[in-house]
Every structure is written in C-alpha cells, then in structure tokens.
Length: 284
Ligand SMILES: [Zn+2]
Image (cartoon, rainbow, N blue to C red; front, top):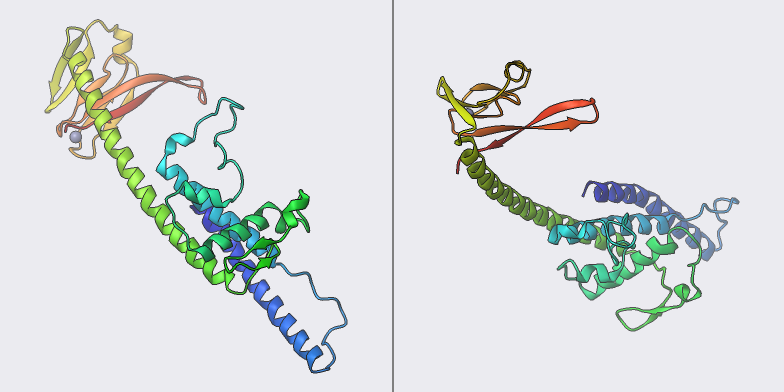
C-alpha cells in the first residue's frame, strides 16, 4: 500500500504539470483561432500526460496485486520454474484487466476502459512512442462502440483514477485487516498447542520445578555447573513485572500471570555465536 501511495503521489505531482500544459494549449489554440499571434516562438514542451497515466496505472497495479495477495497469501512462494520467481502469471506481469477478475473487485464499463488504457501506458505508452508489437497500436473499441487509439487520455480520467484508487485502497485496507486477524487467530491457536506440549514435557522427570516469588522456573536436572552459571536472556513480563533469566540450564519459566516463557538456542550468524530466542505462550 505504501508503494501504491508513493506512485500515486508522484502521479498527482505530475498532474499539476498536465493541467498547466492543457491551459497553455487551450490559450495557444484560442490565439490561433482568433488570428492572434501565439505568445512564444519556442516549440511547446512535450506533454507529460502519458507519464502521469503510466504512474497512475502502476499505482493501481500495485493495489490490485496487494488485494490478490491479501485474498491468498500462499500465492507468494518460489515457483518450480524458475524458482526465483515469487509471483505466478498473470500477476508477474504488469497491469491487465484480467487482474481484476482475481481480486473480487467489480468495475463499471467506464472503469474497465480506464484500466485497459492505463495498462497501455504502463506497457509502452508512458515510455515509448509505439509498442513492441505492431498490433499494440491498432485501434480499439470504446464502451460506446466507437473506435479510438489504444493510448488515449480523456479529461475525465484524473477524477476517475482518484475515485478508483481510493476505493481499491480502502478495500486493500479492509482485506489486510481481515488477513491480520486470521493470522493472529492462527498464531494464538498454534501457541496454545505449543504451550500444552511444552508444559507436558517440562512436567517430566528431566526437569526440576523451582518456585520463587510465585514465579515457577524449570531447570534441567542434569545440567552441569557451567550451564547453570552461563549468561542467558533476561525476560521481564509486562503483565506482572516478574523478571526471569533463561539459559540452556533454565530454559523455561511460568510468570505470575501464567505466561510460559521458553528459550530456544539458535546460531546467530550476524554475531557469530549461539543466542537464545525467547517465545511467550499465554494461557487460554
Ligand atoms: Zn506475567
């Protein structure tokens, strides 16, 4: 969403230049029509409206891809051929009307036409005078059944782009919130399963249970003196204020608010030594 906002902001900045270009062209046409002299003998600067359309199209492409991922995050994984491509077609390509069919977004015929035209500017119209394939520049039908060039810009495009962008952005926000809620529920369920398994294991003969100030520490019975004295991770519970030091000899503790803290050693390549990853498993 942030990259979509960035692209849209850049497009909007360019829109002020597009508007100034249009005002100047209208003034020049009026002068010619009234047989007055055109203000400047210099050739007018090249219009930047195709670049505006390209950036606006990329912003919408970004939102549509975000919506697709929010619907099915499993889409993002290394493909078999080639493995470094993380996104399957058609989403590995640029903006296309077929994207929309995969995102549960419904468009009016005018919005569909807008997406088709923006797709042309993203593909080539915003960057080159012609497309790579000869057929790219053949005329197409409008929703009203007329023929027009594929890279066409209308004065009504910017407000329609704004409305569509805001709508898709809001839908992406809702889809992201819904996905976040699903992920957090799945995470809570996973933590409950892990907590039950860990407590079962920590209650076994291999562990000694030591209670101090209503905090229960679990110590491995056959730990060596060196392991018992090794530095560990200091854990401070924000709920009950209990502080617990976990290390390889004391791998777990239950705080006063019944959160199980469990430390797992892992090798941190960045610092070149083994460290502890402490996870928390609250009670249901
Ligand atoms: Zn606590």
